[in-house]
Image (cartoon, rainbow, N blue to C red; front, side, top):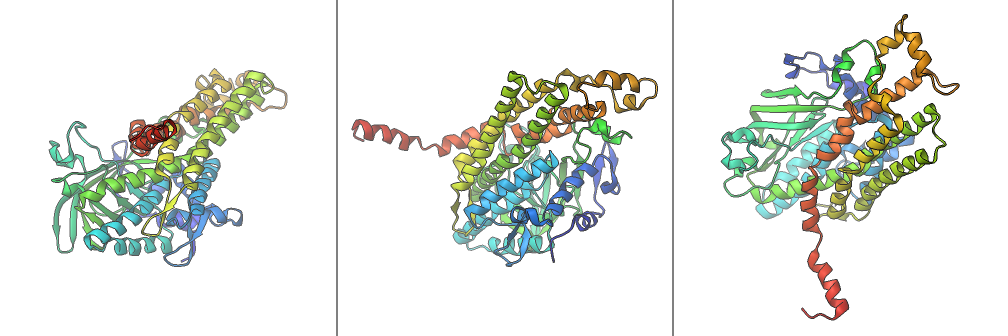
Length: 482
């Protein structure tokens, strides 16, 4: 099958699904005004893959089938693939100014590819062949796949096996000759509703006695027993109003889903890990590395848009020539390009796993994400500084359209000659959206917690730092014997 068009993708997700929002069941979610922007974002991915200008980044040649596929379904075969991944993510951030929802599944597949190979080599299992067969279907049908890792975790002071409620971590509750039955929940699921399939993984390293939690599998997102609860975002109900300018980014948006698995059956052919506790932590670490690499692209692309908005509002306000304004914009560029540099660097130092696929440099990927937990906050702060206080005190679009008070707003929102007051309003709302509204969830807050909160990266940086080697450098220079 050729690459899906945006329209074909939209038609393919029109299926019954057990979804709730605001306490009510949602039918035909693809028509819901709160959900539509997130679907538009995914459609943009399918659109760009059809355009010659972007095909080098948006598509790749499958090593499994030899066919041209969407890069989001590709298994990295070279350092160049790793670099193009980051460049593609920056491009999509520039085109949508929000989370485009496909990175988690992409990174899950690449982590699972090498881990299943190593499990098979040690245990004489057949997970790797199962996964390849499963992933060929994803590639040939041009499917969108979510990656589901984060459990609700219950009491953080207790291990999975010690939880008062064992469902705090998704686990196997029963099995037979045909497959397994699982129960639990996965939270912060970016784009799960918009995905055709999902791959579930453990959320942490596991120990003896926790085998039921060491489970990974593929599943259709509308499978019986799965309940989806749509996550709220700041200012989301503005999308229910007739006016669109108050939304800020009225074309595109992200999506987070709370996913509950209630005694869901998984057939054997879709199981990629079942009880192999010794590989659970490695799967988590490899996925985290790939996903922390991703943030050197996606957050940079959104940062490009926010920097552009800050520069434009400075022109609209007539302050663009002030030296301190120029300096703040330069600082935003410096921070954003530093993030990109880390994403490219960890990709450039990538290496080949025994399974044949390529993986980024783990230390630099964690340094990349550690920077992402900080720099977008400063970029956002500077954007708010340049925009001025109007981003949080503006009247509504309905006021602008009012015959009585609209002319007053037009009069007093006008700044420089030739600048339309409505364009200034539109831009201020856009900056509000990126720094304080719906998009800030995927830019700023997700920069903190996505792919693991800051301490998770610090732990990995400590593990990867190789202090003994650094101490040996000093000993060699000073002729200190071991």
